Length: 405
Image (cartoon, rainbow, N blue to C red; front, side, top):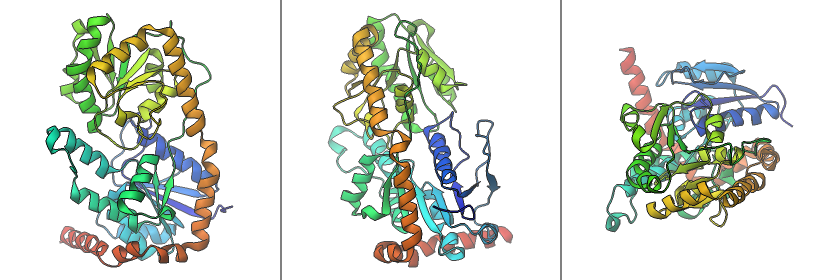
């Protein structure tokens, strides 16, 4: 068991906001996992804190890009593990960690595969005959290189673990499936005590922006022909263009940020999440299952959560079928209760934290005991750390020198 003298440094892309995004919830869960294993955790970020940032009961550092002050922090802290939150932070700070703390385990927390999400986004905007092998090649190369440079990469989706193994030939020893943990609430509102549909999402995340436009233009008009109900749109960092979509006459209601995501999800009879692109697993849909709120989503929305044979509602990529499924779920209490139960079973069987805590601890302990051997087997990672990654270092040093001048 790790002892309390060991330090973990987490380099965050942003300060965690669990009420704004699933990424914030995921980060708090990672911090708790390390603390449970008696590590002292420090969280650092170049980002500005917001009013929505979580209160962290751990050491916190504000750090600066392209500055040797980070190296000084490393010397003082001497972390045994450094976690990079998303590949961009590994690009920015990984070489500094490798130079100053070469024996520190370097872990990449992907949240989702950015290259997969971006390629799907590009594909949505293309005509059907131009969608084959649509990729953002630069982003893909950068992210995969970051994975190879790291000692371990955490992924929230088994789909993405398999993709990394089959498409990019990344060894299993470099990857760990660690989903966002979720379990059913003990008490939830009944079918009769709920009303209306809802959608929620962080609007800095482009799949959510696209989903609301798709709901308004393609799906909601069909549902409103059958049901005189409302659709409530919630989300952090909502742009004015979404706020302006409010249409009281058609029941399309835009609220902005929800003080409690759980409260608004549990008040609705069903969640609608027609996500046409994205990656990872969708926190809104896990939380929907926790609240006993059935949902209708797309294949991409369900990816990494369900296997396609069971869902807490319905899965459809066709707007007409999507609307019909939503109507049936809203009006049929029997199907609604069956969907709710499916959601509980999915959480219990696949997202209970107790299924993963031992594996996480054992993986970290194995890395601590065999880091040299582990790295010797990762030839591509050694090569990237030796050669191509140095270009990031030299660019950073050039910017730092320029800033001083």
